[in-house]
Image 1 (cartoon, rainbow, N blue to C red):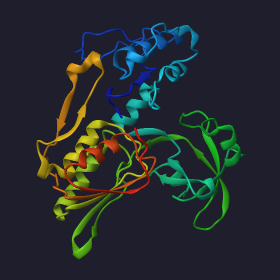
Image 2 (tube, helix red, strand yellow; image 1 turned 180 degrees about the vertical axis):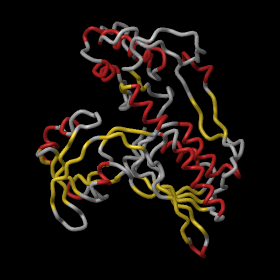
Image 3 (tube, rainbow, N blue to C red; image 1 turned 60 degrees about the horizontal axis):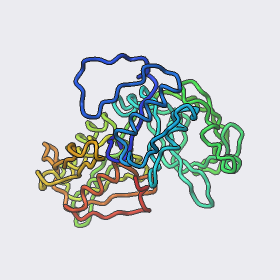
Image 4 (cartoon, rainbow, N blue to C red; image 1 turned 120 degrees about the vertical axis):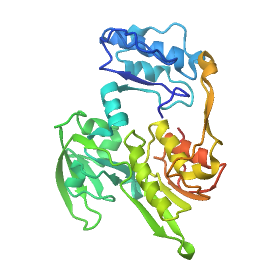
Amino acid sequence: LHTMTALATLALGVCCGLSACEAFRDPFHVDPPAECDVESQNQFVVDVMGQFYLWNGELPDDIDIAAYESPESLVGALRQGVDRWTRVRDKATSDALFMEGKFIGLGYKTLRGPDNEVRLSFVSDNSPASDAGLLRGDKIVAVNGITAEELDETNGWNAAYGENEPGVATTITIEHLATGDIEDVTLTKAWIDIVSIPVAEVLDGPGGQPVGYYIMDKFVETTKDELESAYASFKAAGVNTVIIDMRYNGGGLISVAERQVNLTIGADHHGDVAYSFQYNDNFSNENKSTKIKELSNSLGSDRIVVLTSSRTLSASELVINALLPYADVTLVGSDTGGK
């Protein structure tokens, strides 16, 4: 969730070594670390969290930045209370994901199934996984020869996949749901262009009324055009009831969440409050409420169904909470993740 409301996502890496410029300074600007050594990056963490972190008043006064071997370990030590999310992220990778709609990976997500099995919950279009014929529901038996059970015991899933760089090969032992066949499939990590809404359909609802259904997988900049296209088709079909599948959506840009809310209910709720920002005491003068807007493709949906899971997080939850006061919203699935 790209906001300083509760969390700080600390972008490091390509910022290092950049000199200060005379560009417009917004209230949330922090100078990047002057050097790329660990101590400078740790100081950057302390500076950002001291200014913007929602719980900055709970941070210790005497933080020894030299005692931490990495900014990641420092952030982990400084996180407070219910905060499970504040973390360090490489700026180049983050910008590619959220602004360009690209990520490095194999192209699938996983979820625990019956008997704690690890199954593919989502396969991205035009990815190494989809090119290899992997499908939602297929079971991961092993990664690079290490069984799923062994990876569970050692908490070694992330390390098993190797470096998150294009060209890194990973051999996955897959049990195919459709046939029961087990095979080794070698996938090579690559840049994947995100398709945020892989499915958007107008279905026949009760009494022949049109119902709009779509899968919302990501909240990135390129999602906005996909949303406009989906809602244009819904509006042309006279859709009032919308089903939004966000079972595997971990969130992203607030501006995309705002667009989604505007398109879903904006025709009837222009000017009503969608959500509010609340900052720490340093920036309480920046607190504000964001209003719903009617866009050219906005619906006035009275009934909304949202499919959820524990992987429904952040901006997905923001959308749900923004819709609840203004429509009959039904959640189908398990509890969301609580971000």
